[in-house]
Structure formats: C-alpha cells, structure tokens
Image (cartoon, rainbow over all chains, first blue to last red; front, side, top):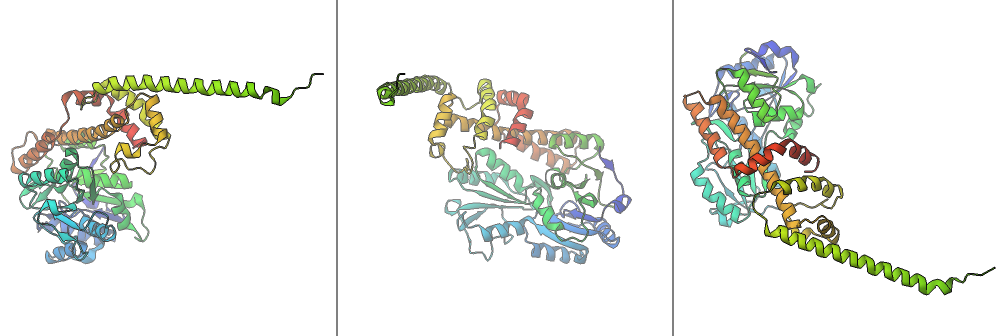
Length: 276
Length: 177
C-alpha cells in the first residue's frame, strides 16, 4: 500500500540519498519548475546526497549546461548520468554494429559525435538505427515507413531512453520507447535499450557515495515503467510523482493500485508534485 | 574338470553383439520413420497461431530442452535454426516428435505475445484511470495508449489461450529465458 505525501520533508529523516529523474520531476519540457527545484535544494541543504538519472538523449555535459542555463545550482548534485551518455559509451566500445547510423528523430544530441560514425541520409545506407528521446515527440506517420524498411533490412535499433510517453514541450508525447516497442512487435530482432529502468544506472550513481545504504535511498520519478521499475529492481524505496506523465487525478489511491498491479511494482510513496 | 577356452566362444559372442546392433538400428530406424510420419502430419497443420495442444507440449518440453544445455552460448536471435542443430539436438527433437523450426517459432512467438500482453495490460490500466478526464493532457495520454494497443498483433483466440497460462509461462521463461 502506497503512502500519500503532501510534503517530502515529512520523510526527510528516513533517507540519506535520493536518485531522481529530471523530466517530469523538476523539469517539464524545457521549463524548470521553481518549487520542485526549491525542494531539491532544501533536500541538499539538509545534508542529503542527490543523484540525477535522466533518460534524456543528451550527454551529461550537455544536460549539465542545459540545467545550469536554467539557473539550476549544479553543486547540489552528487552525480548524474543520462541515457545519451551510456549510449555514447556503448558506441565508443562496440563497433560490431557497423559505422553508419540512421537518426530516427529530428534531434541529434551528439551521441555518436567524435566516434567516427557516419550519419546516413537514407535508411538503406545505414547499419543501425539510432532512436533518441525527442521532447517534441516522434511523428509516428513519418517513423513507421522507416521502421518497415529497417525491418526488411534487419537493422538493429539503439533505443536511447526507454520512456513510451513523456511530458514534452507539446504536452504528453510519444517517447522513443514506444517506437522501440513497435519495432520489436513488428519483428525487429535486436533492440538495444539505454537508460532507466536499467539498475546499473542506480549502481553507477551511488558508487563511492559515502555511507550509502540501500534502505536509506529513495528514487523519485514520474514514470512507472522506468523510474519505479528501477527503484524496485534496485531494491530501494520509491516516490511516484502523480502529476507527471501518468497524469493521475481523482481517486489516485485506486489508480495507483491498478497501475502497480499491471506493472507488477510496489510504490512506497506518492505525491502530486515535489514539494518541501 | 572341463576347461573353458575363451576362443571357442568368440564367434558366439560376436554373433550376439551383431544381432543386438542390428536390432538397435532397426528400432532406431522404426522410431525415426514413425517420428517422421507424425511430424509430417503435424507440419501440414501448422498455423501462425499456436494451438492449445502445441502450447501444452511446449511448456512440457522447454524446461527439459534447456536443462540439457544444448543452447548454451547460442544466441537464437542471431542464428538460424538449421545452423545451430547438431546431431544431439536433431535426435532430441525427433524422439519428441517436434519439428525444430516450429519449436523455436513457438518459443519466439510466445515471448513476443507475452510482451504484447504486458504492454496491453499497462496501456489498458492507464486508459482506465484517465477515462473520465476531458483535459488535453489526459486525452493525449489516452490516445497514445490506444495507439499502443492498436499496434498489437495478438489475436483474440491467442489472447484467451495465453491469458489462462500467463503466470505459468512467465515463471517458465524467468527460469529458462
């Protein structure tokens, strides 16, 4: 049974560290939510360690500057990782996919930059597909014919960020996870996912964290299939923000019970938004 | 006292061994032919959908096949069935009246269908809790989830068949992926 929280300060003494998402937690599209950010700052001021785990396709350096540009005090974060950074690392160390990629989304976050890969203008010239999280959403009508061709060519897909839907600049938009899911259903044999809910992300973030204890760690996020699943798989407590991508309203308790059941997850706390 | 000379029994021993060998070959050949007949009949009835009998037989055989370790170090998504079959595997399939191609087809279809059922269940529960809402964000989310369900290629009959065995299948694939 999940416990409702109005203010996160109520449980501050139960935790020493927090692993927290970015989008849907304190950033919505390109906007930082001031109150949520203040909550994180207060968390930091009360001696907690905060680590960021983002399913964004941006590399860590780019997310760092994006947040800094939005007046987020970056010193409050102990560590951060993005799906884009992990994908970059993968491409750097694995050359068996080939050297040419087709970028499925309009945005190019520079995952393959500087690694000697070539961006193909046409899918037929590519060795693999690079599907990146795009906060404007992916246009399915454009993407589907490309996926069909890719399937025919038996191309592997790198799915950077696993969210099937996310809070983007145009409201709730289709995430790259939905495209990867569709590709797998169509018969695409190789989809390589990067990002939450991979527990190695949590392990990486807390590595070397002084006095880290799993029982005193909390994962905060807005997505059941990524944030909450990572928390469950990592064996730490979880806090779901209900005003994020799931847009819960009305009888939230019942909804949460239904959702937890169908996702097979246990949610410890829920709150409408991050408030101190 | 009669002294037994081993050499005098040698022709007899050789004859007995020869008879056993021939008999075994005949048994194997008969089994092989019988299996061939059964498999040919099965082959003529193959459909893209998995039948209840096939599902039961697969659930019985998949753990057994895995425990033999025949698939160790083989990535099924990379290899063609014909490329991975060695003599041990061929024998295993023949004696169990399974067509290897169909066996792996059933495996891959089941894993796909289970994934699809999971997606469907998640999407349905999201829609269920947003159904009374009329605001833009809720409608966007409902549409997204409806599109996820629509993309599924699972037939109502298979959905029904798998629903009744979903827990058992998930447990089995957790143990023997």
